[in-house]
Length: 58
Image 1 (cartoon, rainbow, N blue to C red):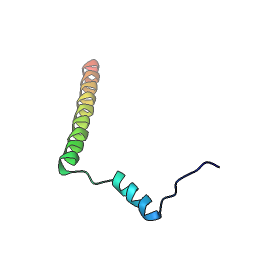
Image 2 (image 1 turned 30 degrees about the vertical axis):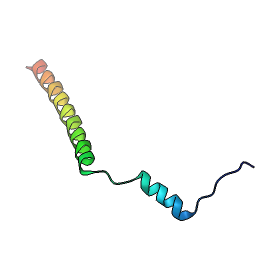
Image 3 (image 1 turned 120 degrees about the vertical axis):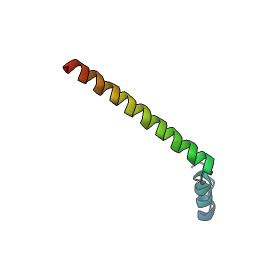
């Protein structure tokens, strides 16, 4: 069998918690702004598609 290192439950949980460390306010705001920019881009694209479709039926 291969040698594997064993961690205590506490150490394993601490490693997992460190990986999921809370983001700073700036990081959260940046992520939120990026999501909003993507939503705006989707909305603009949808509006343009609808306007093109409307012009075709006129």
